[in-house]
Structures are given as structure tokens and as C-alpha cells.
Image 1: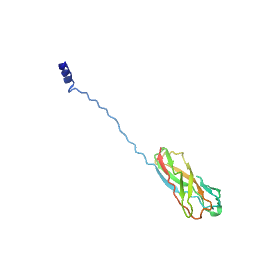
Image 2: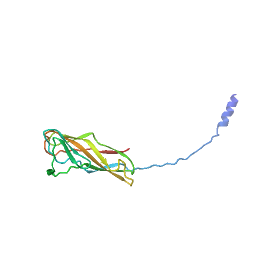
Image 3: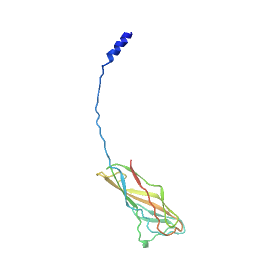
Length: 164
């Protein structure tokens, strides 16, 4: 029996069968997604009253007020939605993120910006040409305190964009 095992082992040595295959390779480099601000969010001029109110700027650049806030055309300051250009890989979809709220600070109590609204030109899909672009408009609601101190208030809104 030991002789048969040695014979079987000896027969297997030096005998091998090799097989090879070739796979193709590829890589695709895509354009990075970018966002560039083209206009700031402007709530315009308004007056604070004895009660809390809001100033709303919509994506069509229209200003409206509620509560104790009043405005008049005599101020001649136009409200405007923020505007951004989003660029990247043509026909790619993307998601937009921004904070739930942020503050404007100035001479009085900070005022809160929230209830952001957006309008995009093609529903979140970049154009079909090289370096496809999309326009994003961003409106919001500013909460104004009762008897808010007069003066200029400033802040920022961080807007991010990522491919889906």
C-alpha cells in the first residue's frame, strides 16, 4: 500500500496545468461638483413693531412681512434671494444641504433665519453639456423680535452640494 501511495504521489509531481485569462480595465474621471455664490440673501429694509414678526424673501425675490413688522416702498431697498451656480458632471443628480437655521447679528438681539426655500432650474440634475450648470435660488424667513434694535445685521448661510 505504501508503494502505491508513493507511486501516486510521484505521478502528480511535475505535472501541472496553468490557465490564464485577461481582464480589461478602465477608469472614469468625473468633474467635481462645485457651488459658487452669485448673489447674497437680502431681506431688505423694514420696521420692527411692538410684537414679533417675520420678513420672508421668496425665490422670486419678493419680500413679505407678518406680525409686528412693516415695510414700505419708500425704503427703496430690494429684497433678494441668494443665488448659486452648481456645476459638475453633466446629467448627474445632486443633493443640497443647508442649516435648519442661522442667525443675523448686529446692534440688538440676534435674529434667526430659518424655513429655507429653494428653486432650481432643472430639478437637481446638471445640464447635458460639458460642465453642466444649474442655478439655485434660496429664500428664507427672518424672525424679527419685538422692538428689534435698528441697525444693520449680518450673518452667513452655508450651502453644500453633493452628488447623489
